[in-house]
Amino acid sequence: MSEQGGTRLSGKLIVGLTGNIATGKSAVMRLAAAQGALTIDADKIVHELQDHDAEMQAAIAVAFGRDVRADDGRINRRALGKIVFDDPQAMADLEAIVHPYVRRNVAKQIKESESSIVFIEAIKLLEGALARICHQVWVTRCSRQRQLDRLRICRGMDTETAVARIKAQPAQEEKVARADVVIDTEGLMVDTEKQFFMAWNRLPDPRLAGTRMLPELPSQPPPQSSMATPKPNAAVLTPAAESVIPLDRPEGLEVRRARPADVAAMLLLMHKATAGALQMKRTELLMALSERGYFIGQIGTEISALMGWNIDSQVARIDQIFIHPLEASVTTGLAILEEVETSANAHVCEIILAFIADDAPPEIEQMFDRQAFGPANPVNLPQVWQRAVDESRPDSTHVRLKVLRDRRLQQA
Image 1 (cartoon, one colour):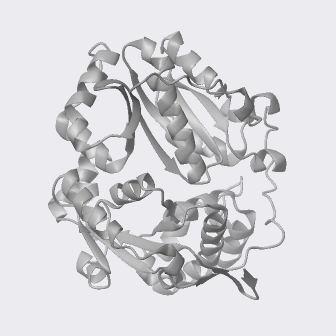
Image 2 (cartoon, one colour; image 1 turned 30 degrees about the horizontal axis):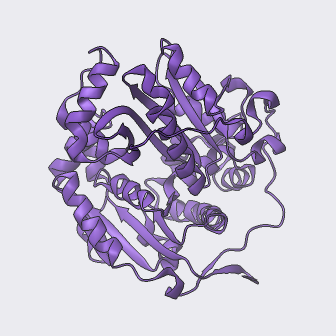
């Protein structure tokens, strides 16, 4: 229901998630997504808007000068940061510009999703207006040493950079003091899961949650960037749900999310699928499990397919594919792709990108063909999707994609 100045949302339970860098927020968000919650990363929304929203780009340029806007219209975050990071008033002015756009985007995603539980992650959740629309605030925490380990192992930072990033943030205790739920991620992933499910099972019924007011969406879309966008290849990018060949599931086929207890089996499958070329330590995979999602495909107790994937800014990405034997590509492999698509749709994703090794066997290519993933040249994609490819594409891979929502194609 809409009212002047905002939209009332009822029947939705909204949880705000915050915490300092590398304290396990993404692990909690992944667990929430696995339970069917809509997960929204507000900080990534800011980056997407700065890159692609002409209206907000213009507002920032007016406030902070033309030099903060690149020739293609995107905000130069390095130049903007030099202005605002050491000037509290300038930072407040920037947030006053950005936050309404973020809230509008958040409202849009919530309205479009059928999920009754919503998790919103924001590093500055407690400092902004988003906290006021949350029914609960959850905070993740861990020791500084654990933060340092995660930044070095999972994000590849050197020690000096990692320490500087940690010290640049306020003390964790400030967030913990304002939390309704605290998730301590110091231990193993199984310990984090226990805390998560305890808090999850205590969430109130969304039907009984108090109504929240979110900003009204504009009746007209914001102006598009004046930068010319290459015309997409409609033959490749047209949504192709009808061309999918239904999977004849053999008895005992199961697709599930990987757990820490699966690490040994996952490492063995990676070894077999790559003929020993991929060497990953157990601790590295455990860290990866806390930062990203993996789907396992198995028949009975035999695991034959594994895919690593994530969702960011309404784009789902599959960037790790391990299948052995290759014949499993038409059973457990296809079943995982179906599950990825189901999850991507639940999170209102626009596309699914698949990054496939250039030397992948034909069985892998055929698997994606069967699920209507078309080959794509990034230069023919809308700018937002081009950016997603540029930021995520591993070396020595090519791109296939499946369009779930074609509104960007309609705008092009």
